[in-house]
Image (cartoon, rainbow, N blue to C red; front, side, top):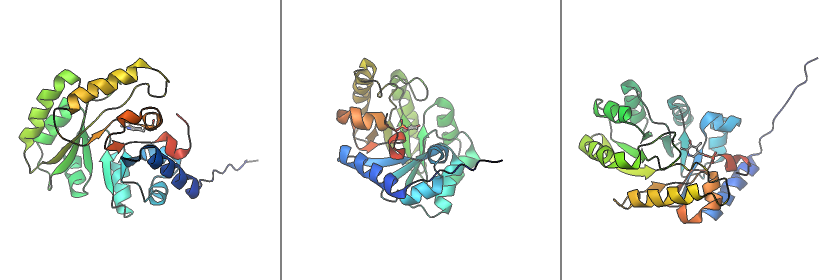
Length: 221
Ligand SMILES: *Cc1c(COP(=O)(O)O)cnc(C)c1O
């Protein structure tokens, strides 16, 4: 016999969790991370419920396109960026934001002619060591981004990702915050550091944008 398993997702609980995050990071805008099918909860359904979010973060172009097709008007950020010119052009046409985290993406962006300019988030690796330009590479990346000109680049923003903000008292997080502050001070631009753990553990790092995922779905980091 098949045992039917159902998961019921509470819209009220999702909204409540977003409200708690807002309360915690009252001076910041919230980019609700809905990658991986909203952590398995249903991409479009969750985004519709979280219509108070200031932006949505996804990993894949297909997810961003599904959100746009379902009428989501907020800013949508492609958290891992794109590597393909056709996709870059499509992302521009659908008014998506791009993260740029490596040389290959810079080169690809420079070789495409998107139909409208992007808001680009430069991703800096301050210690997560997964994606992002290392601090010593940032000056060169900035030079190349500036060289794209206003037909490709509308606004440049900056972000990083914590490696251990969920470990209380980890010195790594404080080192990341300090390294990010040194880089971010180079310009006046919108900044984003905090995932869920950062939202609750690092109030000094809330900056202009926080990027909660897990905590939206009720998971305590
Ligand atoms: C997944 C992800 C987040 C959300 O992290 P949580 O720990 O789930 O809150 C934030 N930023 C980026 C870049 C991500 O990839």
